[in-house]
Image (cartoon, rainbow, N blue to C red; front, side):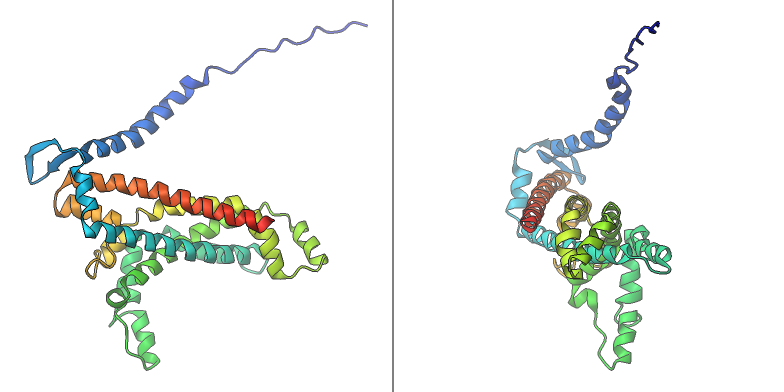
Length: 299
């Protein structure tokens, strides 16, 4: 009985570096060059009204922010906005995801309707809330208040930060729900049925099965939302313009004011560097807090 000679294994994998090099180069050019230029200008004096007065000023631009009370107010407003929107969107997104995980007639249409606010442009969303819902004379909320015999409220003047939080939460809740719902698809329904057989109620299923299963998904949701929420600008620009006073002036809006209001590009660049540092600090803190709570829930 003859045996055929063993097949010789040839490596067909080329040098993958040269295949990835164009994509890596494009990524570096697209992301790192603007960031490097931002750091460069943060150490220089650069005012668009006096372009001839340029030069290296060291840490003067950073010192200008740190000694400005408006900067710390903007940082505080940014943290309040991000924290409030994160709490609302993650909790509401989790509840909606569990709801739409169930089978019921018209589920596909309901999912589409709930996700649709995320595809509305931020400026359009802000104008809808400002002029069609929150306007003290023509808005829907004012009409409902009048029908109930109450005095209409000028939401953007009396509750400016709460109004911005409501606008942003309305738009980002579908994003959180979509990611959490995707994570729920990998949850075995047999596991939930076994828990029901063992006598677990709905809250116990949610607390000890669903939430631990979504640990990584929730971390991803928090990380992505934190990155995007720290750059919220259009809603504030189109609705309150940072006011009344400094009530809704966040760090991104302050950077805009320094660059296009005062034309101090160097100071604005220093503020952008602070924004990057703040984004990393907030993301690390929130992710560690969530990881600690989820690990405690498993024990």
